[in-house]
Each structure stands twice: as C-alpha cells, then as structure tokens.
Amino acid sequence: MAQRKNRIRAWLTKTLEIPPDVMMDLPRITMIGRLHIYIENHRGLLLFSDREVRLMLKQGQCIIQGKDFVIKTILPEEILLEGTIELVRYIDS
Image (cartoon, rainbow, N blue to C red; front, side, top):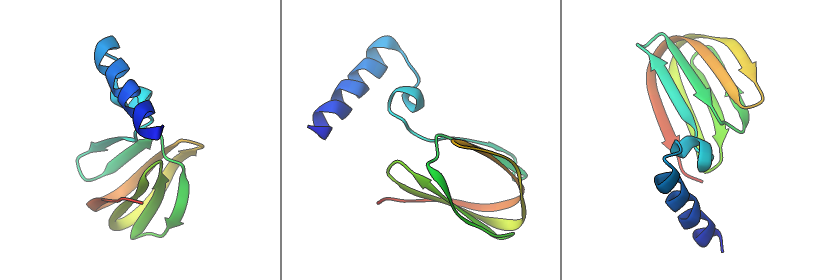
C-alpha cells in the first residue's frame, strides 16, 4: 500500500509540476558556500555539537560535520546552521 501511495505521489508531482520536496515530503537542503546550510522538512534535531549536527528525516538521518557550528534559527521543520561545513551525509533508515 505504501508503494502505491509513493507511485501516486510521484505521478502527481510530475503531472502537476509540483516540486518533489513539497509533494513527497522530502528534505530541501540549501547551502551557501561552506558557511551556511538551511534544511527544510526535517523531523527533529538528534544531536548538536560545535562539530556535528544530526537531523531525523522521514527516511533516515542527515549528518552535517564541520567546525564552529551555531544554530541561527530552529523551527519545527526548518533549521539554519552557520559554521564551516565539511561534510553532508545521508543515512537510510
């Protein structure tokens, strides 16, 4: 049943030309150089330190590693992180 829902969502996204992150509840990640990263559609903050941030996603986790991290903005589904970004990685659940 879940596979059918995903196929219908993918078809609607393509047919109606809706951005996939909106229709399929995918994370949207915007980086500005290596200084800022803005993540939308996350499911919560799992870990925060000045060198690593872990976010829960609908299908896994996003790990951001670097230096001197500061959370500039955090909302229920959005986060703006500032620092020197060295690595962005996904882990499937």
